[in-house]
Image (cartoon, rainbow, N blue to C red; front, side, top):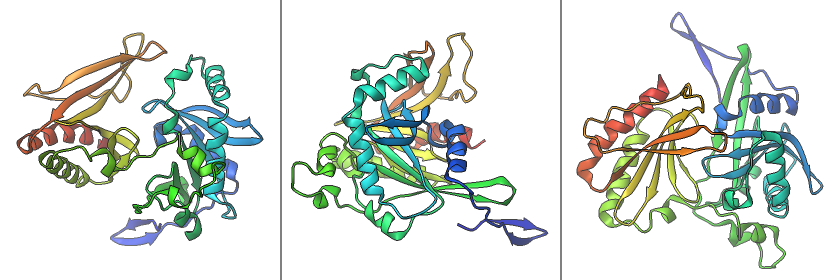
Length: 319
């Protein structure tokens, strides 16, 4: 990635300024974990089962753990390391819950965790073709993020996204002791095609049209989890889609009402003159209240008004 600045109508290149140590990348990401990845920081350098996990984080949206590994070189296998981390997590669930509870002061229970949504994020200045090709499957629970530093403290962050329709299980081996096969039994990564497979032809047309219109917004991309599809702007979700037999459920987060009645800095208020949305509230273990707007899409003639609502959230995030 090359960055430029404009001076008197002429472009000048911005020089790269390399990270000196892996720890420099780690400190930067951990300090900005919620902003960059919408994750809750749990701890750094978590030792478990003979491994040392650089950063342990928690995904409140999916109720799952995420491990973040930082690299400067390229002499390692993301597949081997990633599946080893997930395997040690699945075999030591109680230790992960205990670490979360001790570090955050909250009280997670085993039943609160969706272990099938566990994932590993690799963050490095670059990945070689071998590493990128090794995760070029539709269902690997890993993410590759390239982070680059430029002069004047400019930072660029970009995810490598697989374009394959092949499953990792085709190369996982047939032995019961295969780590990939063992982890894949519990950790599931769904595709957009799988999540939308039950939609009728008419609803599929509604989904494709809505998706295409949102992706016309600058700097947006689609993100798929086990249960839903979201469309993100700069790694923050604009909207979540849940696919039902007779409708598409749409949800947009408003923000948090703190226990003292104050609102989070990013609290979003939507103008909905037709009144098609409802507000759903829930209470976090901290006592704060989460809020989101929810509405349904059933037909193509509803798309235009839905886009009016969705565009408000995008513009708010882009302001």
